[in-house]
Image 1 (cartoon, rainbow, N blue to C red):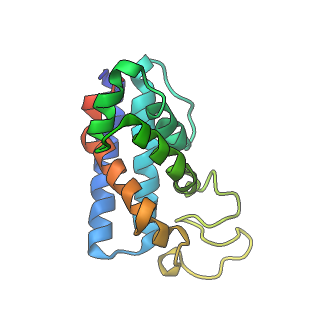
Image 2: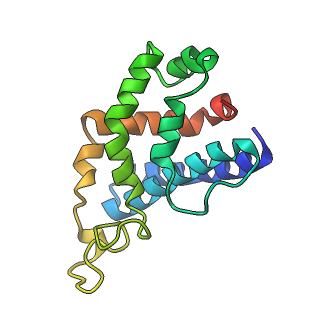
Length: 169
């Protein structure tokens, strides 16, 4: 892991701790989702800094990060599958394909990417604020708390906690 990766990983860890704290405490969905989006953006940036060159200065990257993990060198595949708790790398690849739509939904929680759609800061169209973000029920929340979404949350946790184990992969 290079020093640039270390910087982004440390921030991803801090954002992840905030996300977990807010979620456990039952804090409004908007706050948890804001931190979740930042965790995924920053762990992707940490990974893409492995080349020593900066990734694009955008709020995107999480689905691309997952796709990269699904296309790593053959000699790293068994180790990566095991790291993310999959028996076979092909199972991990299939799982990634299945969660990419959820990853896109998380990525589009960033206000810069959500257009006029709901995001944790502005859950309503820009010209028509209707209620506070703290009182909004976000459509992605039930997805993240069951099935594939919950499994994605587990993998995000592993991605943050075990980053040094795959940072150069």
